[in-house]
Amino acid sequence: MDGTDELVTWVLTLALGFSLAACAGLRAWLPLLAAGLAARFTGLVEFGEGFRFLSSTPALVTFGVASVVEIVGDKFPAIDHVLDAAGTVLRPVAGALVSASVLYQIEDPLWALGIGLLVGAPTAAVPHAAKAATRGLSSSFTLGLANPVLSLLEDVAAFALAALALLVPIALGVSVMILGGLAAAWLYRRRTAQKAAAPG
Image (tube, rainbow, N blue to C red):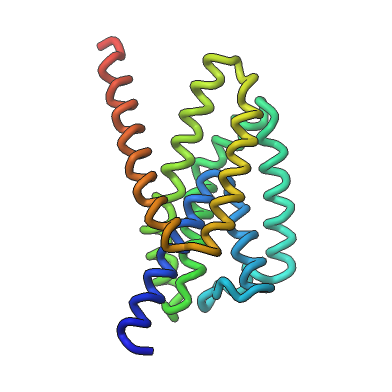
């Protein structure tokens, strides 16, 4: 593999990691399920050393059941708050894991996990924070009645992200970075405005 081919491979891999991590910010288990199925049955994803268990039958069954529980549970106002609270930890962890897993060029799993933490965890944290903020506004203005509709839209976005991440990772990866930057800026401005408005 010459230098150009190697560069293209790295760009594709990092774009895939970014895109799947962004999906994890909405649904923690879905990108792991999608990547595991793709690695096992299509060859669109190659897992690195130490992460090939993600395409094993027990892992796929676990991710499948967890995805169904998360998707269904998120439609119920009492449960969605619990899922969002747990997601504050789980979604960045899932983003880091799925990002690390696709870095097959790195032979040492610890190095891959370190890069996954740098790339995947913050990438997953931004959509999760935006999701939580949107849910908070929805709960305030609609008493949670609109939350199931928002949840359904999040399902569509998560499935679309997972599919596009596997099919067009570079275009989606660039889009995720741009949208992530915009979302982070919006969250920062919102938090700054809240602090300024708080009684002092």
